[in-house]
Length: 292
Image (cartoon, rainbow, N blue to C red; front, side, top):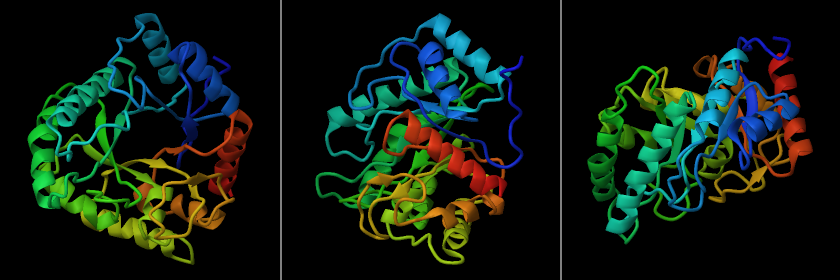
């Protein structure tokens, strides 16, 4: 097919795409306009608890098209999920919401499902919250027994409040709580890790941060990168994304990102401000940084 594109040898670059109106008919059309080489989607309202069934025809068309185009697909789970919550109802809803995202991920052929690592609410100690994470999240990981089940990708936060995971070394206790499960991986958000205090700028800022991540979780665990610049300075603990090169991270760290051994073959997804035009420009900018 003329629309087929080979998978780049280094880092596929794409974006989060809207899917209201159809995963395939709307989502992949948007991806094509971005010239995306990888896509991320929501399969439920990201700010709610609903667990809608999919449209089998759209699912099949999406899965087939992604396979034909060598287009790695990912699901982002709803933002409300928090396995560290002190509220029992929130934890129960988190279990059902993430189980839904994982099931829908398999149905559409997604390689991974991204979930935020959450926070220890109610003034509780982090260790208590992590025991709760283990109790409720480990069984979901154990349900991922099929070859086509997605990986569960933990995304750290910008370090606001009582965050359970924001710096690279915070992934250590989180992985330990989940027995370093074989279906567990990391989604590294450049804006979040920068806001949490890892200065990615300078000659070796990005490589040093990636070294720390590998030292913490081991090689091969980094499965996806959310490539976002930051409106705020390093260590600001503010989750405010900016277009690539227009924020405090700048272009050079993204170029460095795509030369580190840990990122070999790892897709980059943008979640930057603006509409389709701005997103397409960010995708193009990252490709130029990659291809030199």
